[in-house]
Length: 258
Image (cartoon, rainbow, N blue to C red; front, side):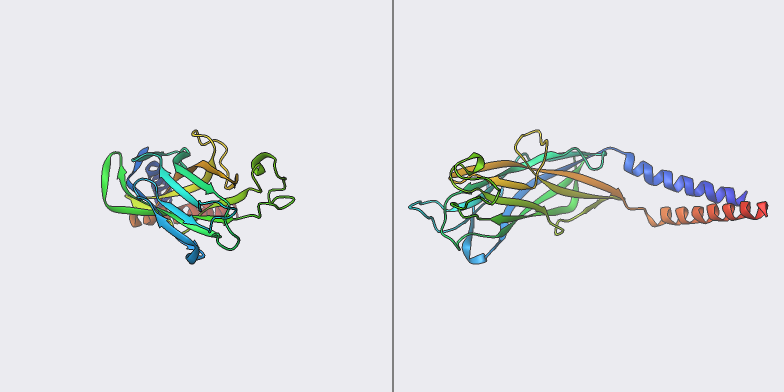
C-alpha cells in the first residue's frame, strides 16, 4: 500500500504541473520602447527618432548624385501587445513594422549588422506585474550588394523582379539570446521574434528579406510567446518521491515473477 501511495503522489505532482500550464493567461506588453543599437561598423551609423514612435538608424555616403542615406525604421504595432497562452507557443502576431530605406551609397560606408532592442512592462490578465520590465533583442544581418552585379546576389538579374532598380540588398532577422525570459508565478515566459511577413495576418514568416534599391521596403516583424512551467521545490520533492515508489513497485513485480 505504501508503494501505491508513493506512485499516486507522482501522479498528483505531475497533474499539478500540467494544470499550471493548462490555465489560459493573457500576457500584455505595455509602455513599449524600441531602440536601434550597436551598428557595425560603429563609425558608419547614426541614430535618431523617438523610441516610443519610430526609432531610426542611418548610414552611408549617398552615391550617384543622391542625397539620401540608407537606413532602418521600426514602428511598434500596438501598445499593449496581447498574447494568450496557452497554446504555447502562442498564436504568432505582428509586433511592429520594419522598413529598410534602400538608397544607393558609396562602397565601404554601409553596415554589416545592427540590433533592435524592445523594452516593455508586463501585465497578466490586465494586472501589472511590479518590477517586471523586460528586454527583447533582435539582431539584423545586413548585406549591401553591388548594384551592377551579374548575376545579382539573389541569383536574379537587373532589371527584373526585386532587382528592377539594381541588385537587391539582403536583410536577415535573427533571434538574440540576449532577450530576457520573465517569471510569473511558477511559469517562465519567452517572447521570441520569428522574422518577417509581407501581410498583416503574419502568414508565411521568413527571416531573409530581399529589398529593392531606390525604395522603402517594409515588412511586418512577427513574434510569439512561449511558456514553460518551473516546478516549485515541494512539487519536485513530491514528484521525486513518487518516482521512487514507481521504481520500487516495478522491481517488486519483477521479484514476484522469479
